[in-house]
Length: 207
Image 1 (cartoon, rainbow, N blue to C red):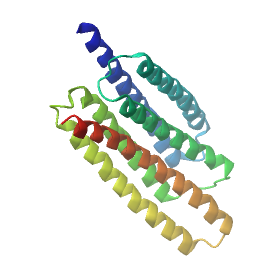
Image 2: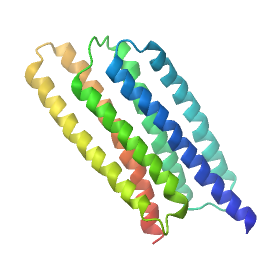
Image 3: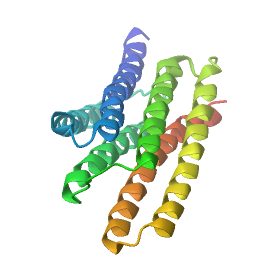
């Protein structure tokens, strides 16, 4: 039984460490939006973070494939892992596009979306902190709901950003650039909610 418990603990530790690593990336993401364009080093670190997260994904999926016992369904472990990977990929994709699109100035809605994403990442980390005791710890669902609420806030900011963009911008190139950026930012915070929803499904299936 001790060996089985150890295997289960390894999954919880690795998922929590993955979610913890996203907090630093989320802080960089939000700082880049506030400080742009004076953030070359932060953008470079974001790429390093993305590569480091790829290693975490591989390690978790490899553990899944060779473990006879897992704390919950392998498909859910894989989905949660890939969901967090989508979060870091999304943030890195946004900041990479700032240079590719020759963005001169960050729109306030982009700062709002980045801040909401950081908040969602912090709540998602709390989900994984409480996850080992998910059958008894009601805080897991509290944090899942909070991630969903933050994603809803992000949707409102995203819709307002698009409305403002199309009503005020006359340069079609600027519209195309920012439409793409806002889409990517909205997809990134969506990835936080999708990951939290995986854990909600785990709780429901094991109720």
